[in-house]
Every structure is written in C-alpha cells, then in structure tokens.
Image (cartoon, rainbow, N blue to C red; front, side, top):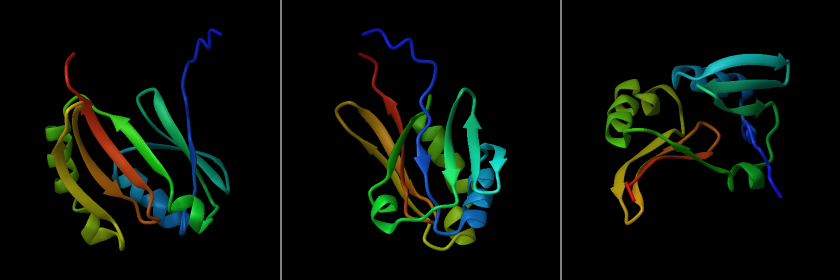
Length: 122
C-alpha cells in the first residue's frame, strides 16, 4: 500500500479550552479557528486540532512527538517563554541524551505530554 501522505494531524483535548488556546499561541503555534469548539494549530506544514473536549483518561495518555532541528536551541527558547509561571500545571523537563537522539518534555495545562526531539545523524 502506498499512502502518499501529505500530513498527519492528531486531535487533542483541553481541560480548559480557552486557556489551552492561549497556551499554544504563546508557544508560537499559528491558530486557525475552525468552529467554536475546535481550532487547528500549525507550525510550518505540521499541525494538530485542539478540541473543546476533555476526557481525563484520554488526556492523561496523550503524548505528541514533534521533531525539531535543534533541540538545545528549542530548549532555551522554551525556558525563555517561562510557561510554568504563566500556566498552572505546565512542567518542563530538560534535554535528555539517548541512543537515538535528544529530547526535552513539556506538559501542557491539561497534562498532555509533548516530546520535542532531534534524531542523531545515522
């Protein structure tokens, strides 16, 4: 099977939809409002849908991996945003070096775990 995929866009929920919208704008994603209950957030050609929906078991098990070109630079930029001071429940975890590459972590205001990673050259 040949998928000829153009993009993949996960759907994520939010415990507080308006707060999460502000959070992702602060994280420098472009917001496109699709309806009163859903937005598309994009960076370049990749994106995700934020829904005005919250199911704790779903949110607690949601993780997203975003590959970045320079995880160390990205980490410094995350720190400069000071998101944990602005949003209750937001947590940052510093860069870890692993056999496949490096990554840092961010929990959004709802608890969704973001992995920002960079793969090692092969």
